[in-house]
Image (cartoon, rainbow, N blue to C red; front, top):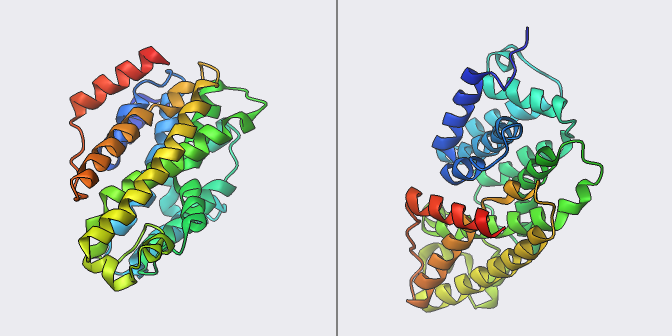
Length: 287
């Protein structure tokens, strides 16, 4: 008999995997209603697993193989090792139980192929499309699961779309040094070019004043999307709002980046877990 993700051992295994791969997502998931937590944690873990692929490989091919595994599984080509993968089994049960389309998840897999190569992110439109595919869809599905039997999922589009873009900007700002060391440019190259910077300048982090100006522009874009997300979240039914509990973490992380950039630097330290939990509690009270 198929094991339900509500089963304690399976749910705990996935929660532990999420805690390791994406601490913020794990902490935010703790405020989800009981019925929503296991399936949403499953989706979050799936997204985190895809995001982690680039950190685990030094060449594109092993990453492509791992992403192809998930592509084939979502397409219905389930090889023997899929049945032995707790995350895969839980993911397919979540998709079936909550009647989720696999199309956005396939797009997420496809988008993560960009992570494996050194082609720069061309422009803002491409970046925001990428963000929608790797981040926004998780917020969208989380809200649908929180609401249950939802007939109007479009009501979450603005909140999920803008929060996903803001989150992707903030994560790219935090990983800017790491990405440069890997010769990768995740933030839109067109904006760097608007400040007179070429690919090589960005990767070399020079001239520093121009780099800081460009990063401030990205932080401003992140703030714009975060503000729009906040406005959209406030208009949602209370049952759906826990799906967007990552908001206070993204907001605080962005504020730390902005403070660093005001000092003509971009290295920012994230909050400790206990501070995040306090932020989450305050956000929950205010909403």
